[in-house]
Length: 582
Image (cartoon, rainbow, N blue to C red; front, side):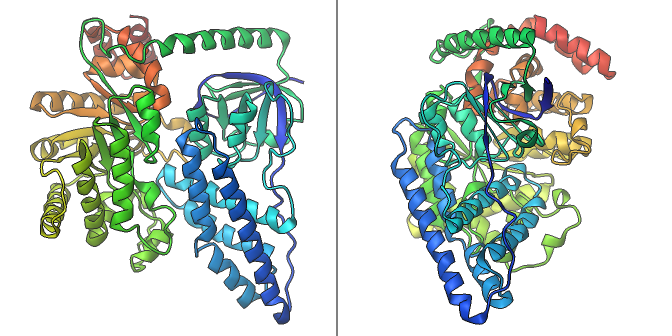
């Protein structure tokens, strides 16, 4: 019987093949109390399992192919860090000692506690890091049970027609996608910024995540189609549907070959306007993919990864400096915009800073996050600012500040940057004294009060993800209202257009670094609004570049003005259609 499942599109393309189901490690483990005399033996079992997983991860790291995406090595390092983290290891041992739980019970109990903390995080990227902890725990449970470490072990021969279907997939296990050429994957869990999604994009594998109950509804060897463009999974397709998707798959393969020809051509419109296409990165080695894709720089380097696995400490200045310097040097002189930490309402981080109680905020999205959190922790912020400034001695660096809304926040931030420079001068450490400082425009108040920013800052970057969320009062992670998250809502479009227009009048550079920048269906709309700098995931650069090369700014003026003059949904869609057809 044919049926269709819907999820989140995270990696474009179409995959057709037979389902290969991966069974998750049984987290429904035995629960029993141990005798006091058994405690040390139970803890030793845990230590042995921990050591076995360390060996597995080291072997995976050593086996990485030279052409493996840089994300894979980074994710293995992340899992190694989690494997040693006191919040997982020591707390599990404490549960064995204080409550006399068997180690499997203690491990899953601690996983549940950590998961609750991550569920409260507003930032989508950090919230999805919960999956990394789950995957490490799964490896530990398999080691305790003496099972195979990889869910893909035992797969031999050609996998060219196989599509992996799983509850979730650890990034380390996805390395086998590279060597065994699976066609795509489908998972019950995950989101646009989950590690599996990032790896899928880096490998160019069609994927759909967040396809609820897919692993329960799809059977082994079912013929399935994964439409990575729309997040659709079709099970046991009718012959006419299979024929249609086979044709689309061939077309896409041809399109990809044609896109590669654009890599080294100038990025400019038909009327000769130069457009800058930059990359968003999460890890220093992502800069490699950015350069290979032809990016003209890094428009957004998210620094949260340095903080997300340091539950018992904050990253030191040298550790941060090394990461920022690596990204800068890998870009070979191209500009790198480094965003200061955008995190808040994360209990593990808050516990480091003294436990002032703000983890209990009723609405973390409106609480102490991003620059508000940084200003409340000036020593932490100064450490990061010094590390970023020091990296500027090795290439072109800009500092980007998230979630600014008030004049006093801007002024306090600039004062701290001056203080960081003074401290570096006193220490005799090199940096570029003329580093540009910019602001994320991601709160409606910031867009409406734009003159505050234009007077004080060197550049702006519109973060469309949060701008949409705050403008429409929509939590993207809440399935009950996720359908209302609309980048084409008139209010959102007017805020973007206003910001672009006023920044241009003031002569202040402005870019868009949210999901809208990487959506080729919106490229002409943004060009018509006046955008000349886009920043997106490296995998989207060429398809967006193709739209730029086909566009003429003068012909876009009238249809884009019609979009902005429309408020009824039917009118907006009709106007957008005219933009796309030009």
